[in-house]
Length: 297
Image (cartoon, rainbow, N blue to C red; front, top):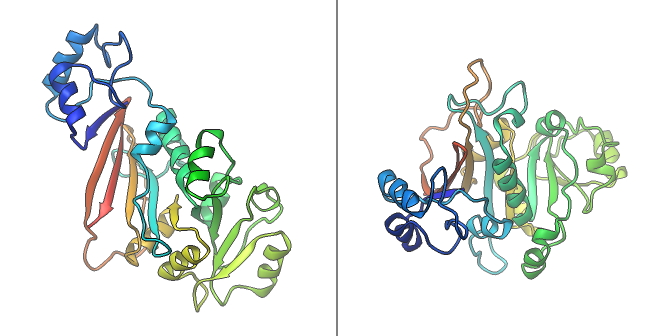
């Protein structure tokens, strides 16, 4: 994996000298991605211009966790909501209803890292059904980092649903390490609310009507101490977060694939009156996949 942005002192050292210590450095004796040795790595880096890291080695989970760390939040105040999505070159957010065909091994490592850093994973009910969501698991690789941050062993899964038309016999509800949350509106069917609670889920009302109000949902999770928030979609839910201007960060994998067809984009729903501006925070690359991070301006 190589870092394209931000350009740092370490990146410059690699570009000029071919090797350097740290996350972007080639391992001992390694010549970088697709090269025959240090000299070739330096030539390749220089030819690619500023910001090119010659390293092709796989980053450790610790290095990925450092690269994707949440920003520091004021004590007891606020929350940070980031989204993790994947898109093909022609804008498809899924293929045959699922995101997996657009993904890669590196993408899944970043997917796991983002979960390993989050307090809560917020996901739409349709995505739960289509992707076959299971409970988040505790991972030894992130155990010390989570303990130091005062986090539980695994993130909570929070399902957004107006109808609560969910199968409460699924492991997501019967076998979670930490109880699954359901975010819904005040008009949710009472019998489904009772069924959810009987299955062990906690139901939070975060809207006055049938649906969830994004700002209230974000605040309600923060009130429970779940301030490092991650959403994995789907497109309709992400569109609601964008429209409500509560999305702080987008982690977007650009897959080197094209699907044609009529697949949804990563965000759906009504368009916003004025496009929301984001600034690029970082770009990584591996095997033609671009792993980008954008923060709302």
